[in-house]
Amino acid sequence: MTIYLDHHSTTPVDPRVLDAMLPYFTEKFGNPGSVHALGEEARDAVERARATIARGIGAEPGEIVFTSGATESNNLAIRGVAERRRRRGDHLVSVRTEHPAVLDPLQRWAEQGFEVTLLDVERHGSPRAGWLDPDQVAAALRDDTCLVSVMLANNEIGVVQPLAQIAAISKARGVLLHCDATQGVGKLPVNVAELGVDLMSFTAHKLHGPKGVGALYVRRRDPVVRLAPQIAGGGQEQGRRSGTLNVPGIVGLAEAVGLATENLAAEVEQLSKLRNRLAEGILKAVPNAVLVGPKLDAKSEDGDPLRLPNNLNLMFPGVDGEALMLAMPELAVSSGAACSSTSDEPSHVLLALGLSADEARSCLRFGVGRFNTADEIDRAVAMVAAAVDKVRKLAE
Ligand SMILES: Cc1ncc(COP(=O)(O)O)c(C=O)c1O
Image 1 (tube, rainbow, N blue to C red):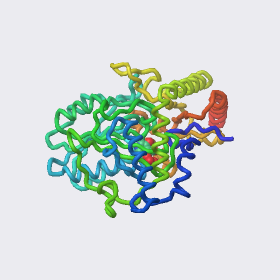
Image 2 (cartoon, rainbow, N blue to C red):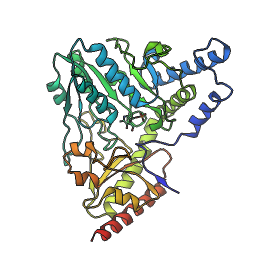
Image 3 (spheres, rainbow, N blue to C red):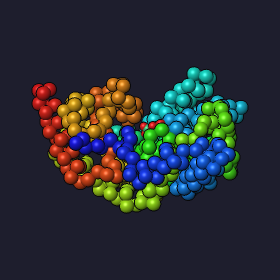
Image 4 (spheres, rainbow, N blue to C red):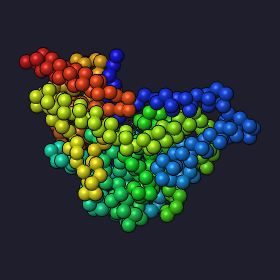
């Protein structure tokens, strides 16, 4: 049986989430746009889900727009806001370590004449490696900046960015702030009022919900954020995103958010225990393994964790990460060679930390999840130690 330690990539659906979803595939299959009773039943389910999700992140129900996942949410935020606010200016600010679902839409704007500033992060070796200094944001903002986009937590090195400080800086300049919170929801306390963000993306499949459904929080008060819709059609979601709603998916997203937020403290404790066990085990068993990203116990000035509780990224100098993965077929992790299995480019996140391409290729990312056990962690440590040993010997 594969030991799954790749929870930044996706997660298994929690059985409680599946149970909540199932009736909406069969007997409760109505289209929420229909007037009849089946439609009303589906509409009620969607609105209950919207309320649960809004409560989970400290928003109003009307501020939640359902999408097909965080990629679409990021596109809707970045493309939708910039299109509406182009008159104000065409300067966009983000960070080198963002997910491609942010960087790519920004790149498309750059091709259409927008100016995009990508900020640097703290380098490898710093206890806060990967962290964005809010002063950098302050220095980058201009009168013609129309949007800042900063992720809450990084999907490769788990670094948590100082969103509340960045929000205060952006707000003072009248600039909207989008946050890709995909990896943060369910692992960190996420409250849009406390974070001060204007738009926030997240997705169900990273928190034991189904794939293909997510949401975008769009602030409706102080200020009202207006978006140019990117998918036109039947006018669902108050015209912000057309298309028949994915009712089972939305019900699943709400259940997943509800479970994750209700049990957050206990889950964070469990995940960090398992992650620390994994880190200590590998660092002890494997000579020369190096931690990549912020220190596991690094804290912000306010005492908040600077790293996701479930994330670990390790470099095995001189050992190719892909070769390591092939040497341990029963362990599911990701290598620093790629952000997708179709590319063997070194990760742009690891390069942004100042690692060389070879160093980036010798990194492995581990993400522990709700259903992992201490026994699995111990077996994973043994697998990694044996695989590094094997690959190093083959290279001799
Ligand atoms: C930080 C981040 N943003 C966006 C995405 C894309 O999410 P989705 O798969 O829901 O489109 C991911 C998933 O890999 C991610 O980790």
